[in-house]
Amino acid sequence: MLVMRPAQMADLAEVQRLAADSPVGVTSLPDDAQVLAEKIGASEASFAAEVSFNGEESYFFVLEDSKTGRLAGCSAIVASAGFSEPFYSFRNETFVHASRSLSIHNKIHVLSLCHDLTGNSLLTSFYVERDLVNTPTAELNSRGRLLFMASHPERFADAVVVEIVGYSDEQGESPFWDAVGRNFFDLNYTEAERLSGLKSRTFLAELMPNYPIYVPLLPDEAQESMGQVHPRAQITFDILMREGFETDNYIDIFDGGPTLHARTSGIRSIAQSRMVPVKLGEQGKGSRQYLVCNGQLQDFRAIVAELDWVPGKPVVLDAETAEALGVGEGASVRLIAV
Image 1: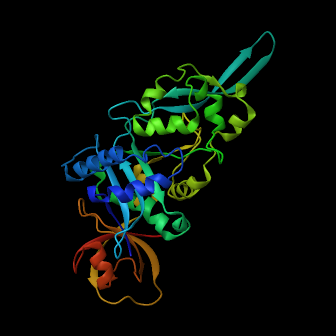
Image 2: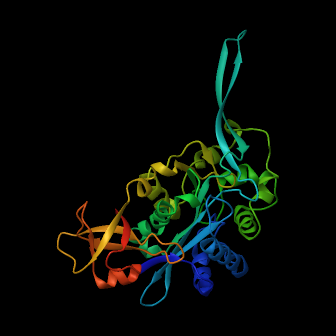
Image 3: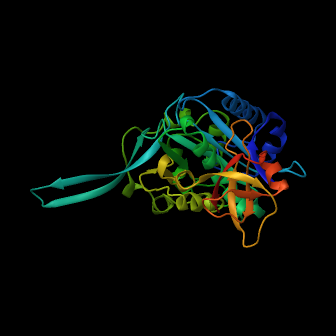
């Protein structure tokens, strides 16, 4: 059984194996043992901290096979994007150029560098092994962290954002980066993302132009790539769009990928999940797949389970499921249908 739980320092080697296979553009999962160790250490401190409002905390989760101990995926939440440094995005805007004497009135699409999204909670570090992409496991890996947010709302902001990896070709070249960022740095896209993962995106972002970029002046290929999703990030995009996230207002400053955003209270897995008392027993027939979590903090656990649950009634868990969640008779779990 695959169980979602907080990452531990003992997971470092397995996490680095996952990071090595993550696509270019996932700068929050660099293939670097020291950076990943710092990430896990910060997460352990965040889970252990007493928190009454969102601050500098970050929460890193892994998917573990309970029988083998092998990791199959990971994901994370940053409580406040840009807490220690600005969180940069390109804002989609329209400028109006008009001349009364010539009877000309043009609307022009521009990109403006901004940090409007600083302070929102941020979903990051999504990775699931390729053979699990189109399975409920991917839902657990993405939405399980939303159940954690629902169980601990005081730790997170009123809005959530997600940077989706943008388009790059099989050689790792990004048309958007080549048209914009590469004019300011003598780096290709892959190297720029690698440095950002090892250091910080801000040190590159602060060298980007502060004046608006007129989109019609960009090459056609770069314009077409704006808002496009990398094929390996499509599953993340699809899951979160079903959760109620929206796009179009902001894009990533490096690859032009879409930045999704949503009010925390309106996210489906947060708004519609329910706390339900547990009853131990054997599963009945006519079951349905649910995401289930125990709602705890340092001992947080979440799984996908086949349940025969009727709203308003306790949920019946068999011994294996209850053990995986670390709950017993009379405890409560949070659940939502897959």
